[in-house]
Length: 230
Ligand SMILES: Nc1ncnc2c1ncn2[C@@H]1O[C@H](COP(=O)(O)OP(=O)(O)OP(=O)(O)O)[C@@H](O)[C@H]1O
Image (tube, rainbow, N blue to C red):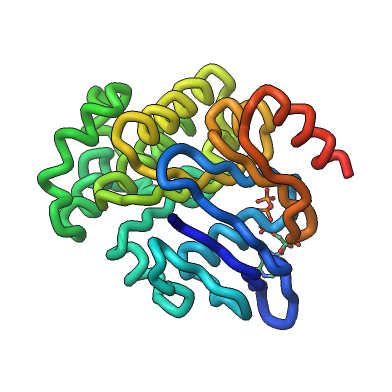
């Protein structure tokens, strides 16, 4: 189990995340919902070790990883899909995948299986990533992260800037990942529908604090919307 206890973090003198408790289930998708500026990205960066924990702790299967570097956390099985469908725009899709595959133990061996999970990418292997659509680049970003063989995949607003018909496809990939390959997923989202359709459990953040959390069942949509309206 991946757990945050009383985690505080921020930038310079400003604390943005004010003592968050969050448990990420051993399987399935956990969503962090919140408006612009609620602290979702800050929280995810803290999970990844890209921002230091000011107080509180993070444990994974009982092991304290609070002071671990981002690099060490990736070796422990964390993978990060940042906001904005980031990839090397001048490299082809294949080259973008190879850069990651070659940098991680076992990456080459996972290449075929990962590409097979994203059939939309297959005809685009020789196209420069900068020429792909937002949805295609998002799939490439997720594929790159999966090449590291993660136990926990952390995604920051994967639906942002993507047309609605493709959002559905991305959602199916995320749900499939969690249910078929047993990869845990932590997802930050603003879109309640997308977030709760994909999720098994959810947490709503407002100004860096948890204001609601629970199972992503039918009642969750109203509960989350109510919490977001505060
Ligand atoms: N690099 C930074 N330096 C200083 N303050 C920052 C920095 N990045 C974010 N913040 C501030 O931290 C707060 C939370 O921002 P954060 O990006 O975590 O929110 P978010 O919920 O991910 O929002 P969004 O949905 O817009 O990405 C905001 O007030 C923001 O201005």
